[in-house]
Image (cartoon, rainbow, N blue to C red; front, side):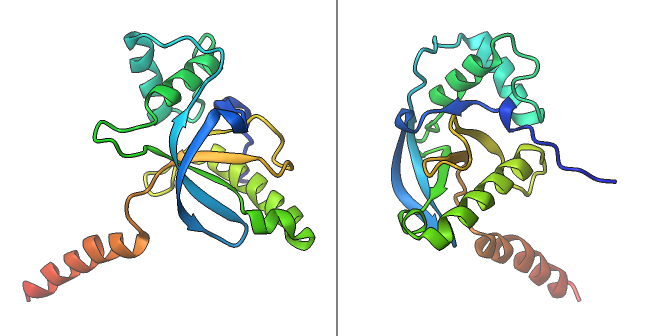
Length: 177
């Protein structure tokens, strides 16, 4: 039998006020996704280069980002805060939160909160190259209107990826006949 474990507590957590968001990247049925410009990890010392290297390995390969670190929560928060922007200036992360419209609609707010809680649980226990990675989440309960998740920011769409990868490959294969 297959089960989805809740590993959300092992991910770094941020307060709503510690996050600076930029432009809207997209909207769904319940939520809005924003580009993350900065994460201000209050009370966290800067990690040294050796810690960054070890955290990079934990964040990219291990389901349990904090399980092997001494003060893993602080180190994970520091790592994510320090690597929020890529070398080329692009945002590395995106934040998903309930939309303003969902929060104001009493018929939508609870289903939206449940949807975010389920998404958090699934992403916290999933590691696959074709599924977006959960990187951090809000310190508050998923049943708080300010609950959010932070994940990798995508720079292309599924439609673009299909066009670029699959259709291009298909054209090359048919060109050989």
